[in-house]
Image: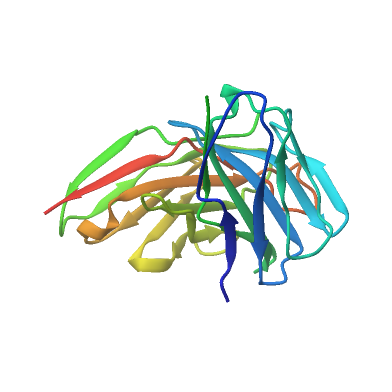
Length: 114
Length: 116
């Protein structure tokens, strides 16, 4: 299994541009998550999904959108990029293990908005 | 409010010495606790978790963590550090309000530097 894969690895955006961060998992996990990681901070949850067709907001959803049309894919959309969205973005998926979901993370996408 | 604190930004230890990375938490009810490690330019990797039972939890790469309910702590430990253990370590607690999915609250991370 490839696990959780993310593309691109790095991207520079101009203010106001849009882009989609891709996330795919091949472990048949129902739950998927998007986080952002800022320097010196822990991860903050942007959006999550409990299955195909079902998504919900996390702690910091403003400026982002998601969709979940399949179990495997969970893309994150930035519509109007702002410098505050400069961050490292991690996608994760999870399944129940010992009664509690364990999250497995992708390698991340580094985004710079100038 | 639920929270996780990692009081040390960085921990320095000599190779071969024992290491401890500290974590304290604040949640209502019984906590579900996790440790993750992040190597440079990589995603987070799961190390271990505590749900219930034995207070000493063993995980990957020789790491273990001790749950202490009275001190609300979940410190990560390893008897003999390796240079390759140098990385960023995150403690996390499950948000008890998260219902059927595992929403995690992460600490800010502790950078572990193991010197030869």
